[in-house]
Every structure is written in structure tokens, then in C-alpha cells.
Image (cartoon, rainbow, N blue to C red):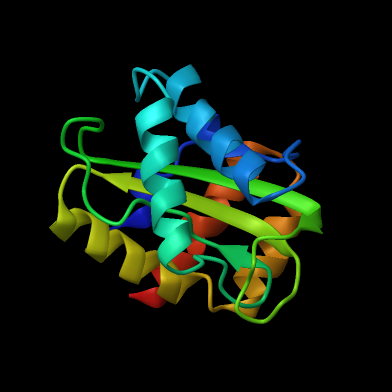
Amino acid sequence: MNIGSYTKPENVILEMDAEDKVGAIRELVDNLVEAERLEEAGELIEAVTAREELCTTGLENGVAIPHPRHGQPHLIDGLAIVCGRKPAGLEFESMDGKPTKLLFLLCAESDTVHLRALARLSRLVKNPQLRKELLEAGDAEAFVEVIRRAEENLE
């Protein structure tokens, strides 16, 4: 599973407008609609929100990985990743109680792809240098390149 190959500049939101968890999920999912990877946002927003009700996907160190609980074969082909950045941070009920600054929405067609992507991305974002570079990336292409370089070093 190579997260970098699924991360596209058009799916990077460098300055998220959202001020809270629900708004962030909506903004990330709306990006998939705009990028024509998803027909409409409603069902995926519901699936991701339902997952959040079970347990937050707000991790530690300013990172959240919102995702539905299961693969969504009727909504998505393959794997879709939307990256969002909110430098000021937003409340995402994170495990460490700190504001979330980096968000990665995952949606996959199958449970297998979903779990592999989630495991790989979780491993990547543990790297403090990666998080720092993502927060400093000047544009979407640089943001994606940071992920690709970090993944090469993870091999």
C-alpha cells in the first residue's frame, strides 16, 4: 500500500475553512465531490460521522484520520484520500485533547484496502518531521511530495 500514489494535489486543502469536526468532515468529503470521485456527499458524511460517534479518529499530535467504519464499494472506486490543513487547529475530540491541524479523510471500496490504508497512514503520521513539513508545505504539490518522500523512507 503506497499512500503517496493515492495522494493528489487536487485533494489537498491547505487552508481549511471548517471551525469544528462536523464542518471539517463536510469540507473534506465535499472535495471528493468537486474532484468527481464521489457523486454526492450526504451518504459518506453520514458514514464518517457515524464512525466518529463510536470513537474519535482524532489522534495525537494534531492529526485526525476521519473515515467510515467499513469499505464503501457503492460510493468509491479504489481508495480516495483527502488531506486538509488547519494551521490554527480545530477541535476534533483528539485523544490528547489538543487541536487538530492535519486531517486525512480515507474512503476505500473494500475493508481490506481501507484497513491497509489506515494502518499505513497511521504509521506515516507518527513521524514528527513529516507533520512539521506538512504544516510548512507552501502548496499542494509540496504537501504531496512530503508524503511521498516520507513513505520512501518508511520502506
